[in-house]
Length: 226
Image (tube, rainbow, N blue to C red; front, side, top):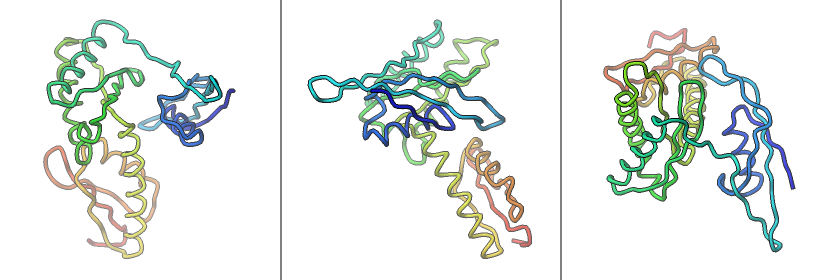
């Protein structure tokens, strides 16, 4: 049995398949039949995937065909480093390559301790990501310009979607109250998402406030002095 699903990104298409099939994402075969196109900050275009379902002894069994193997010594070292890091932390799991996009490499952690590895607002995941990128720069040398993205349980995409929803909801509240509102502290990437999400909204403007890495975005009604 074969079914096809579409999404704005590969991950979104796979999530749609998982929801409709009532399965987790590691329980079905995936074949990418149309690739995504990339835009500035956001991916544009659709991704189409084909899901293969095999039946054995009257019950469905599923395997993932799409496996991205490590390419080169650096990727193998990064996977080994992250595996050892979470093991030393006391929260072992299995690290695999989730995606390659230009100079970005996604490493995905499968672990029963995912909630702890993510941490509050993703701060533990961000800390792991920082350590892995420091290590990547060390082993890659001066010519290395790659960026490693660490994820588990698809947290990154869920966080991005939640932030965009929060930005739009807060913008609506600001327009009704004709005032301004300050959002929670965010890292630079998350703040950029909020700025971009509201960039085309004529009634409001956004600005970052605070010092350090984790600043807050203020959403301001354009007719307000707040």
